[in-house]
Length: 438
Ligand code: G6P
Image 1 (tube, rainbow, N blue to C red):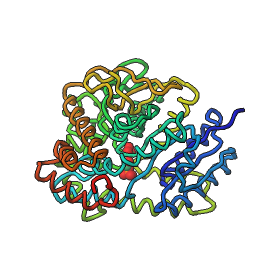
Image 2 (tube, helix red, strand yellow; image 1 turned 180 degrees about the vertical axis):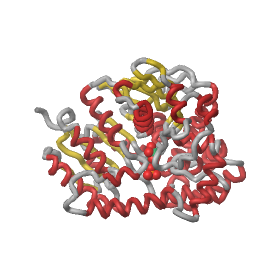
Image 3 (cartoon, rainbow, N blue to C red; image 1 turned 60 degrees about the vertical axis):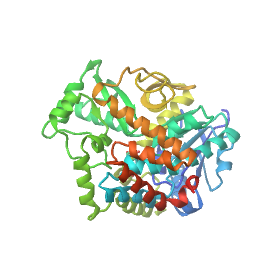
């Protein structure tokens, strides 16, 4: 057998890493990885040591010959890598807590990847991901960049527009979570179900649902809107229920993030209410993280603990490992990923990143056409793409006015004056992570 594969994971100290390691272990026969380099920064050194030790115990316990390397030296990790997975959070959860708290002072949704929080997650992340792209061109020009770092759609857009990297795929666990929810509702094996997705990351819709080749979209929506119906909600988003007539008439299953757009006032009220109790989502997650890292420290733990499923990103490794495996083996199965649109969605420019079903080949994802966006969601999806492109430009240029434009055109921001207030406050709050604006 030839030399095994080298994986470099940037943000290796993440609490999600055990999920990724588990996914690679499970697929070892068809995905012969010889080394996984877990990379972090100085501020994440302690987390890296804890998660890295667990990763080593996991591969040993599974008896697979994968070498786990822990390092702060990103270049060494990238050198000759075959796949680079990115899952980092600039400013860690403390920065996310600011993204979620400050907009609430302006009566605006505070969220990790949407609204002002999504803008600032992008402004902090995009310069770093573009540096990684430059390093990859030098150190592993044939490698694939598999990006999980949020906002995954905006980040993929930025890499497509502002780097020379062609081999990039953006990933999210959203679509796989919706598919699992639909399978539960239909009480059917996933292999009998086909879901046609259309839209953007965290702005995606299950447009058509098939069971054994029959369109069951309406049936799923009936079930979702029935009394005890499963609304296919995400762990990290409050499930406030949908108006049945709205959802049935929309006749698509929206990812949970659409609650921030179609239920704005209800979601804002819920956020303001929980602010003084459990705090923002980031503050809840900080407590979950403490519990997880205590668990990870246990030298007798050699598998991914079930407690990780409390996080919203559960199953993300299934998406990542399925993708890497299908590219490596040229499987040509169909997966929902973020890639260059290339006409798959008629209403979005061909060179933009979209989240659609793709045939996964050795040369990468080939998007399947899904035609026009349905009229009720066309404007919103296009507006979010306008926001993403403007935000990416602001992230790259560090231009204040472009950032103000991005903030103001975001559908969750109530006015230009609120936009300016939030922009100024968030720029000050994140100053150390936004060198391009200083
Ligand atoms: C969802 C999204 C991820 C997001 C995560 C947040 O699953 O797909 O992109 O980062 O939830 O979960 P958390 O537990 O951090 O709030």
